[in-house]
Image (cartoon, rainbow, N blue to C red):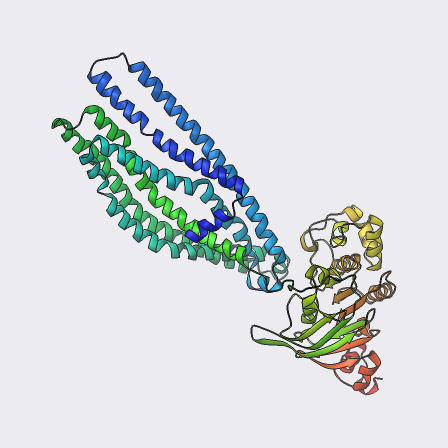
Length: 580
């Protein structure tokens, strides 16, 4: 737990640290003020009531009132400072964590579910805030209250004080047992919360698939299982707490009984005055309440520790794909691509094997092959979403590992089959990669991607808000907006991964004509299954089982009578013996 607290402290900016320390010092001071009114109560009983002397009554009551109001005022300001500072700290920490997420590589997102990351950014961070705004000051408040009250009561009557605090060792043993058993249960509960959030997120994101397959009942049952598992883990913790809590209450009540019974005996024996007994009855809660608080604080500390550990994993995690120390600055990318004996494996699974080819600036390379052959992996290696296990991927004659990531990826425009559109306007989505575009330029790129006609017919034209992930648009419309977005960055390398799979042949032909007359030099990297999408490419690669089995132009591959030729015959309905 010490690591989590130190991490949180290290992430507090200096102004918040100073104010936090001042607030905790105020907490200590208000604990000292607790002793004033019981001391005045002693004078009130012994010097006024017992002595039948009303003269100091008003002055004593006035001081008691001032002390009470002053203490409450100080504590009010303390809580305001702690809450404000905790919100500022978590605001800055959330911003830093979000920045971390932006620069994490694809491998990180392959390993972490969206629901789990959302839990870390919300519920787990809130427990860190709760520690700064409540838990730490309650710990100091309880400890100081107990210590100050114990010292003061010892000065008044050490024998009675010793009897009161004699229960403490028993309490510590019970607390140690509780702490040992509750932490693993909180870890388990945290995992169940993450699983429940992940299930809800997946269902919401895939609601159309659920409806398409009429799987609402199945999804209800699946979420019910996750929800019940989270509830059961919560109940197990509460059951342990409810076993622990009566023991605490018994010990606290024992302190009050000892105060009244033994204190009364001491008065009878003349070892204690009625006013001094009033001090003990007035401060017995200052000894017992910290004990009562102890269980709650341990409960909260364990939840904080579990949540902070998850946030720390995110905070200290380092992406594998980063700029090399000797990465060079480059001008505008020319668009030359070369793969030299590239192999790639992930989790001991071989995806690509000894892939080699080269493309000159301005040329078009097309890749086809069966599902799972490694076509999309080529794009990922080109943009350095992953690093090749063996061999080199070069852009403009320089290994991609020696490019600055922002320059490398900034020179590559990507439009994929799995289109993601933001909940923004049509214009905002097209200009996502280049915020300086004018509306006329946005319209021009939309026209080149054959998106202008339907965009202008939307209720508010280019200002129409597109639903999350492009809800409300057809698959072909989403693909054309994604293509316009890729063109809008004026890339040196344009990557199209089945970008026209959802459009008709006429639209595909129009887009191909527009791509041949782009107003900027551009190397095109096309992944497709349609022969019509790649027949004019300067180089066509056929990938099978992670290996290039055929490469050449459309005419050359037809003459080889291989996979490409077979696909050509199937798509055009030509008997293989008649194919040219």
